[in-house]
Image (cartoon, rainbow, N blue to C red; front, side, top):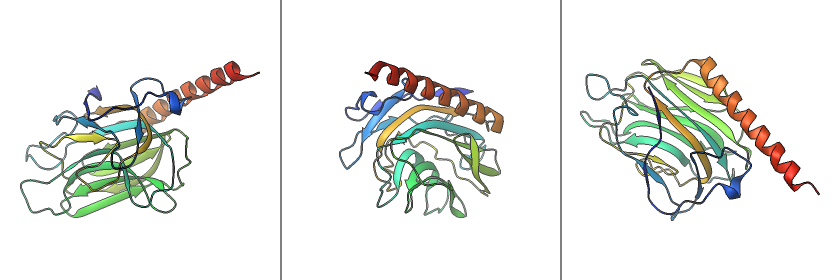
Length: 225
């Protein structure tokens, strides 16, 4: 099952014009800073699958396209945050997962929260400002895999991964994790109730990259003197 994002915009979000050429549908531009807008995704077991114990997470995947306005981040910045408080036990690190910009120099990062603590998976390369990247996470019930531009950047076992029952998700911010607000564009956020095959993720990246290349070529031809 695949689900496109639907949510509530918490304040005005810009059109994609300032971040083109790029992915033109299901795209929003965020301004960063304390007053930055965000999108709230109501809780659903379809986007935060939970096992029969009502606490640990069942298999899922999520993917999106992101284009940061800057790579200078003094502290972690949240892109897509599906995290909240863990109920049913004493887990001080909370539950759920999150895509973020983190580190110096900044790199894309996936954070998974489990009964044993926080597990971070990070991209090897630093972020390039104003460049589109495709991010994906898969969780098969045992291991989490973090993909950047169609390639697995890192894979780690996450024993006791905690889902986030009854908590809303957020695009463009991380109110439940302390992450800062994102400055840039986020497009094509999609959720799946199973772990995507690596070839599928690679194909999705290739398709998006062809769209970006065609858009850039069209824009160049229109602006050429």
